[in-house]
Length: 270
Image (cartoon, rainbow, N blue to C red):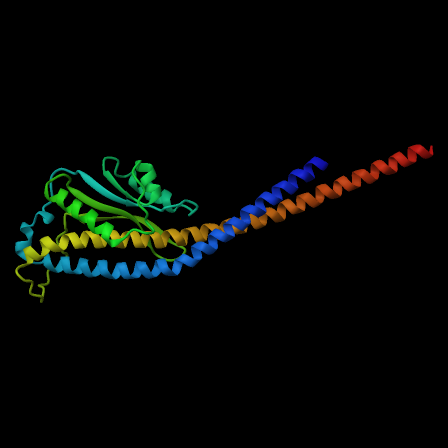
């Protein structure tokens, strides 16, 4: 019985240490949420502005000649996959990698240390991913697309819906889609729409990748905060259960000792 109480004390101590760790991680994640959301909103606005500009350019008939709008018969796919730098974020990383399995033949360009680990490439942080890095990547991707190295470009990221909800999605960037709206643009592009589009696509791809990275990071910190809150509740409940079990075991040990003493005392009397 004494051995049981000792093991229970050790278990309670261990769970309590884990509880303190989850509290600290939850506080760190919570402190990052505001900054992450601000970065996400700014990147979203910039990406939407670029997307709108490209859509307006695509309304011009001459733009259909652009290599960026040519769909190809082959389906060689490149995917920019954005995951987290760390684990302990619920199903955040797992959902991204699960979506990746839908494209087994795609060439993966990882962003985020967890994605880089799976691809055996040098680590690229998703938390600190800069627009300069996105621009350099966009330059290479657009060049390879024009040279016919691959036929389709997409980005797998996590879409932020609320602090409690997010969803892994794929967004296709190249080739450019024909705009659904048939309205004519009231903007005059100089020297012409085709030339402007050829130069704008690189910025559009860079802005989309950077915005996806910002949004994914906001989802990551929110998911980690939720996971740590859940872990804290579970650890607290576990400590309560273990404490109750410990008290019962200790009471049982005391009762047994009293019984043995009483029994021994009675034997001596006889």
